[in-house]
Length: 107
Image 1 (cartoon, rainbow, N blue to C red):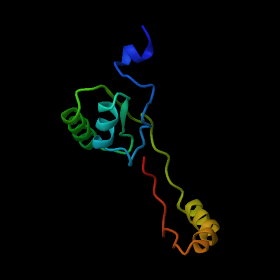
Image 2 (cartoon, helix red, strand yellow; image 1 turned 120 degrees about the vertical axis):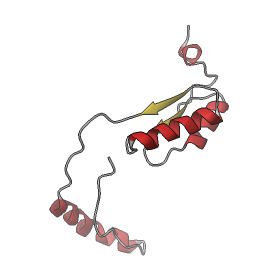
Image 3 (tube, rainbow, N blue to C red; image 1 turned 60 degrees about the vertical axis):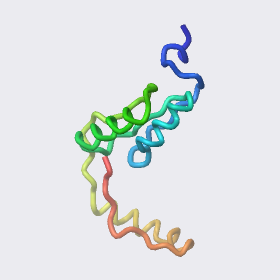
């Protein structure tokens, strides 16, 4: 049995599970077209992850994958973050953009 047969998909295309970017609608549509849709849930709370999974299930009867992170987030060093902001300030200015005031860890 091939991998495509095991996954019950038609195309060897796997949607990347991008935390904060992937949506139930995108995952479902990829799956509905015969590839493997996915949800990047690493930055979601348990309730938000549950809701995204249920929404995806309501939009497709095809297989899809979910991706989680199972590790303790590193503490953000605010001094180092400010140094990075200052270091990148000229690149932001080059494109007429303002750098963020502070960084945050999304995971």
